[in-house]
Length: 110
Image (cartoon, rainbow, N blue to C red; front, side):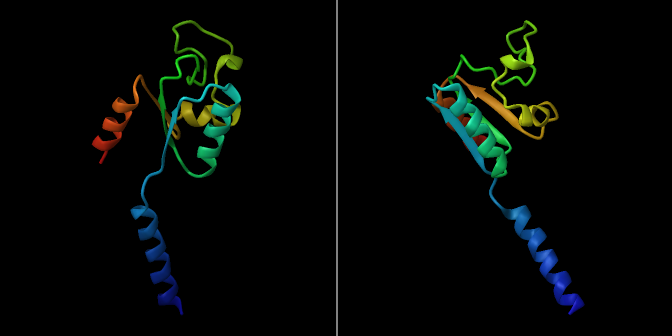
């Protein structure tokens, strides 16, 4: 029974490595709470890279400082429970001006 258990564990590790990487593309969402909900749902499902197209009115820097001026933590649209993940690189939010640019970027990924 011991060797069979080890084989199953090795197979499970192999399956985890070969899973496709999930991505979320956010585009044409206008309500702030919907953006926050999408970020939380994506994290819950193991999606660690989010692509944001357009959406210039939203702030995805967890510290609210991407505009160059220090703002309060309340000025970020990254939910509080995800802010450390973005700061530490466990969750990545990448912005694009146009959907075509985002699609080309995704196609170029390994």
